[in-house]
Length: 411
Image (cartoon, rainbow, N blue to C red):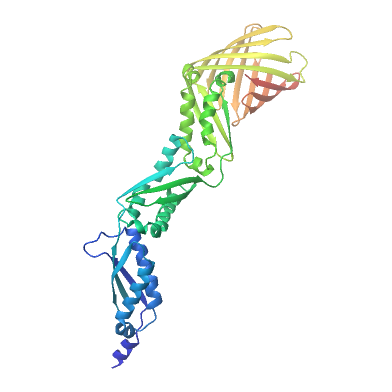
C-alpha cells in the first residue's frame, strides 16, 4: 500500500495546454493560438496547481466547467466548445474553441514613411522584408470581433521585426477591422537625428572653381540625410555613399573632365560629407599667394596645367604672375609619382634659364611637405602646408635668405 499512499499524495506540479478548433473550423493563426494557450495556462495554474491528483480527478467536471467559464469570459471572437482535463503531476488541459461571426479574408498594409522620399521609403521597405507576411500570419482567418483582443499580438510582431531589421525607427500601429482589414503602420525615427549636412568638394587635379558648379547637385543629394537617424545612415553607409557619388558623377563637369568621385560620410548630428574629386587625364590648379613677412613680391598667382602621360607620369607647365613687378615666369616640367603620397620631378625656369628639382610628400589628409632645389643643388625653398578647407591653405616657407608665412587661395 505504500505506493498507493504515495500516489494519493502526489500534486499537480505543471500544466500543459493544447488549443484546437476541432475538425471543421479553421485553426486560429499560430500566434493567436499561442496567446490562447498562455491564457489557459494562467487559468490552470491558478485553479489546479498544488492540488492533489486525486482531488483533480474527483472534481474533474467542476474544474473543466470553471476553466471553460473563465476562459470564455476573456475570449473574444471565439466560443469555448469543450474543455478536457487529464490529471497528473503534469496535468494536460485540452481546449476546443470555435470562431463566431465573420473572419478576416484579406489584409492591406498601409505604411506611412513620414514624408521620406520614395527612394528612401524603398530602402526602408527592403529593411522591413516580409513584414506583410508576418502580419498576415497573425490576422488572416481571425474573427473580426477578435481583432481588438489580438491587437497586442500584432504590435508585438511589428516591434520584434523593427527591433531586428529597422531598429532606428519606432512604430505606431492602427488596425481597422473588417473582412478586408487595413493595418496602418507609421514609422517614426528615434535616437540621434541628423540636424545639418555640410558638403566639401576637394581636388588636387582640377581648380576648385570648377567644382563649385557641381556643388548644388551634390548638396541636394546630401540634404536627403536631414532628419534621418544617425545609426540608420551609418548602417546604410555604402548606399548613401553610392547615392552621393552617382549625383556627382552625373554632373556635366564630372563627365567633361572625366573625374572620379570618392565621397566620405562622417555621420553625426552635424554630418560632414567630403568628396575627393580627381581626374586621371588632367592636372589643373589655380592658386593665389599672399606672403606675410616677405620683403619682395609678396603677392602672386600660379596656374598649373598638366597632362598625364601615364598613371604615374605628368607633363606640365607652371605659369606664375607677380603683380608688383608685372613679371611672368614659365616653367615646363615633368613629375613622377613614387607612391600615392610621394611625387618627384624636374622643371625648367625659362626666364632664369635654371633647372629646378622638386618633391612633394603628403603627410596626411591636410598636411603636405614641399622641397625645391635649383640647378646648383643649394637649398632653394622648403614649404610645410596645411589645408584649412578646400579654398584656403597656410604654408610656412623656409629659404636660404628668409622665412615667411604664405596664405594660399586654392581657386
